[in-house]
Length: 417
Image 1 (cartoon, rainbow, N blue to C red):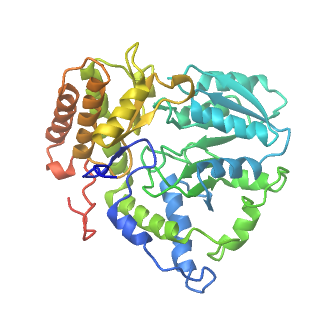
Image 2 (tube, one colour):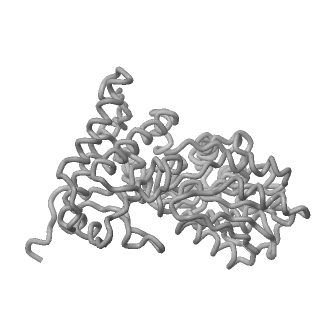
Image 3 (cartoon, rainbow, N blue to C red):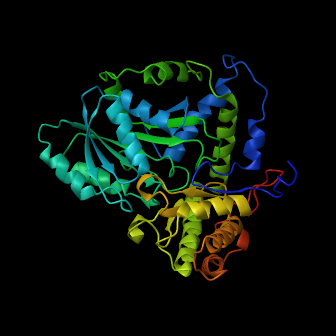
């Protein structure tokens, strides 16, 4: 249709899927090959070890499934628990709600601790519930590390300390889908028994890989777990993975992409990746303050470094801001989900992202908000973010290309610092 083409690139600022670096895209353009060949383990065996580094796991085992993060959820639960087992779960957003629903549908008994949306898991309440469970009927504690729907990050280390303080043997399961690869995650230090992520967020890939890092304790639980599973069976995976293969046809291009994305993360350095996300998130939060708006996160301690959920004023529909941004400015923003539908819009600031890219998104969000009737000062948020980024550069006394910028998305693949 004449006039339907929109020139320029689409600005993707949902909290997943995220932008895929050009070098990762190129790495996935591979001819199909025999996944039973003698050379295939040269690709796969290093992937399992490198993913352990991303999870910061010393003694865990990594399973890579052709699935979304939801498949990883199901794999973690069905391989380590039995129908009727009791689990304790914090519910404070759309994705914690969905994980609880999955647990119930596979036959687990879920003790739900509801928290206000905009807050996260409460270690004190978790400890109290575990202390009251004198017969140790609760087999696991489930929390979402980074609740994408509300822009909230929970303190996983504090939850582990609560479990230990209660002297309870429950395993700890953590959804790190929108945190791992972007926010510091420490599977071994925090005693996480099943850590879960997907390929489409901090790992900077298309959706299609569900990844689980499993502790020795959870692997031992597999031996007595009675939930039915076939596609997601750890036993089948373990046998094949040991020599670098899979029990069924793997997602070959995504595995090559995963190898390249981990090279990106390790070249930048994981700690620098986490720092970059903090800098970007602080810049976005500075913009929100300048607009006179608020985050869904109730206190700064809950603020996520991968997504900001921004409340719209009374009488404004957040969906209108999102629609205008997409139709007029080719900018994709995240929608409000479930309880917060229409009450907010979300800016994802994770993955292959730098300061100038985020400034473009903030400028587009300002135009969309103005068009939707939100009274803000044009340029105020962009200016506040610019000031924050500049002050960060000067405070650290380093060149602009080093100030939290992911400066490696070039045609020759060379890292520039």
